[in-house]
Amino acid sequence: SHPDADAHRRGYSDSTLWPLYHGVHDRPVFQRAWRQAYHRVNRRFAAAAAAAAGPAARVLVHGHRLQLVPGFLRKLRPDLRIGFFLPTPFPPPEIFARLPTRSEILTGLLGADLVGFPGPQAAHNMLRLCHDLLGLGHDNGVLRVGERPVTVSSRTVGVDAAEVARLAGLPSVRARARQLRRRLGDPHTVLLGIDHLDASQGIEQRLTAYEDLLRAGGLDAERTAIVQVVLPDPTPTTSARQALRGRIEHHVGRINGDHARMGGAVVHYLHQHHDLAERVALYLAADVLTVTGLSEDPCLVGKEYAAARTGGDGAVVRSSLTGAEADLPGAYRVNPHDGEALRETVLTALRSDPADRAARLRSMQAAVHRRDAARWAAELLTALTAPVEPLLEAAT
Image (cartoon, rainbow, N blue to C red; front, top):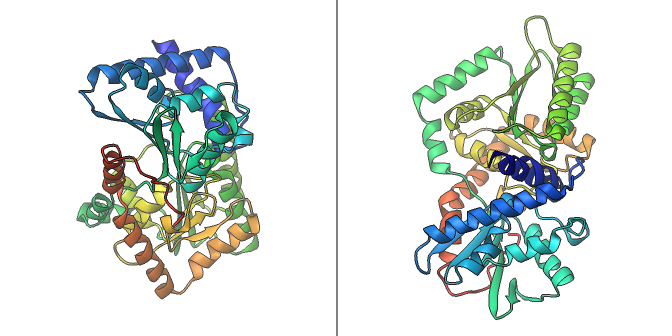
């Protein structure tokens, strides 16, 4: 029903679980009605999967909105091989313990044969939680739930690097990139950010760093264009995200009011969706991409940017909080909470030797093509057919 769908998504998933898992400034909201809707929706997904799956089929459940599905599905269809992947951070015990449904969520996840995360810290947190809250030990990432083994794994999430590179080579996309650059006034430098409307993305910290650099002269307002794309929610957003949008737009307005020249903005702000071809054109038009998330994240935008920069130049400034260095080697890493370090890292990326930038880009591209989306999916599905074995990857 529409009420259940809304309470499940905007309520429990996005207003309770999302801020709790990401550790952002928005306080998680706990409401019994949301919890009940989350339970009902997850049960319906499990029933639909049970009806659709053939004998001994593989079922892969994805995302924080469906964490109860593996447990429900296990009861309905014990013959299935069930995998679960959470593409978001997973909190440590001291944070997760705040969740009234903590045992229910863990029990739901442990209905799977394989529980996967994009980074090693999230997998480690899951194992700690199972020990601290449920008393379950593990052998190199393999838990014992009764007589059944459950593997907790860390797997790098990839992008369709080959498709991104193909689009980057199309004359129409390259022409669009040149057009975008002209519309920005043919600046010497273009800085780009593409983020979801969420406090965990670090947009406000990034805008503060740009503002400080413009004020101090590190960035020249007449030679620099900053493009900030914020992807809107596909459904009505939460009040916290509405407030965040207001703060971002106010911040952009202040920067332009203080530093823009007549007839041209410094920060070009877009609150709209872009398809992959348009994103690739933006990547080609930008000299530096900034990805300053405040929590563990697969950094898919950074990987797309690296795959698109087939011309051999371009730099990524990436938060050191978003995952292992080997996930996107060659990026300029920085703690986005350290404003001074963030400013210096942006300048380092802009002023670095072209040969060094090219070498860093090649390193990123090799990693992105080696661990693309197809490999990520194939590894998960293969793990659901292979004999159970420890799959917890090292950070490298």
